[in-house]
Length: 342
Image 1 (cartoon, rainbow, N blue to C red):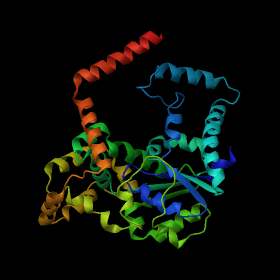
Image 2: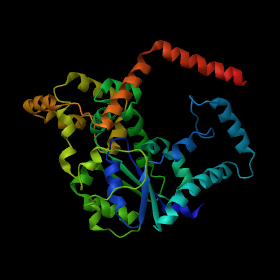
Image 3: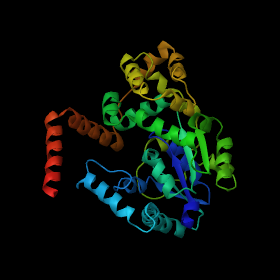
């Protein structure tokens, strides 16, 4: 096992769950280095041995079977395979971390929540901070940020709740790593000191009050993440805890969509996140009708570069899903590629 494994720090959370906020607060600590969402682990998890990608430009099924057979004949089997993958990740993480002189490298990539069993095999000694948030708040923010508030398009493209809630609940329930901290977003923004102290204790780092007032200290480097909302505040705020509910109350279409989506999430997984199926609706039930109407009137489209790009992506994604011919052609091309490779 590599020494770097004890110096890795992963913030795990669904898209739009507050992971960028937490990353910015931890970024203030002089012993933590980070970069915006490097996405190094996700591709490694789908190289063939553990999982595959059914839209890869090669035959993923053959790759999966071949990798399994090859690894089975290595002297140490799966352990040798993990050593090879770890060497790749160690090289990239280590060479980014070493020039900083800091103790930890923090990777905050939401997609890692969907490959947690693999990530644990790769870095079992790392610090894992799992950030959960009200599931409806997550989906509302996801649809608004990436699909221009087109909830149907967002659900078709990525059923976020169905995918992320069970995956993260399983991880929290099984607790397969020693250094694991579960932080509810609503508690983090209400009482940040308590949870930052818990995180620092798990990482054997001193707590620093300035992590709360992270101010204008930006995360260095290029990458993915939230380029808009994260710049609106310089410290945690409770304003966003139930703000989403005003955009749902009185909107039958959104209420029905959330009901369909959450129905696919097991009750026991919701409980790990701190909710029952009934309690999820309480913030919406508490919204006054006039407040809901006012919120809907204030919903205006923003025309900065980020939102224009997102709007264009919505059109592309919507066309892909609605075009039967497009889907048929893509599927036919996939099978033809497989036949030609054979």
